[in-house]
Length: 153
Image 1 (cartoon, rainbow, N blue to C red):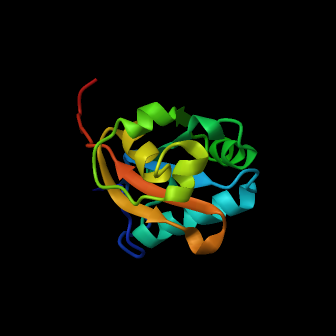
Image 2: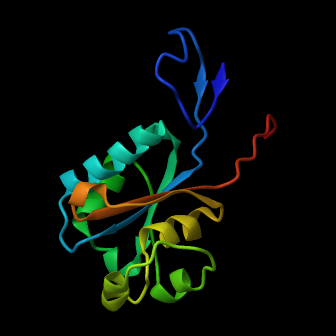
Image 3: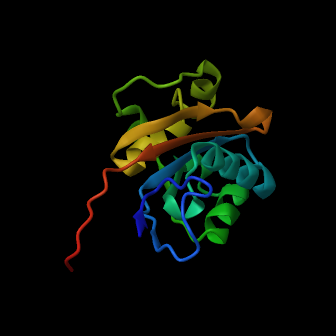
């Protein structure tokens, strides 16, 4: 039996029981009307680089100005993940060292959407800073909430 949110290739045999806690939150920032394909490829590539299976993800988070962004909505539906959005005021209330963008701040009134939204939703710690995903018009960051494992109901 393996209990982990991070799975190395060839780490387990076929008869191994894998328990994957959903403790990774994906923060997304993107251009307006970004395609589902760009969102999916960007998120899955970052997860793969970090060796996190999609099953370890508990939510997708962004700024409320993206609540109707079809590419993100379609991605969340495909992987059966809640899509949470937060106001600029909420995201700006977080203290910490974020990868700032004056351009993003001029558009949505927050200096970083992906890192702040991932951290705000997870209420944990940032584990992957903003990645621009090879210029696809998507930024992705990952945060992890502190897991609590209990064998009781």
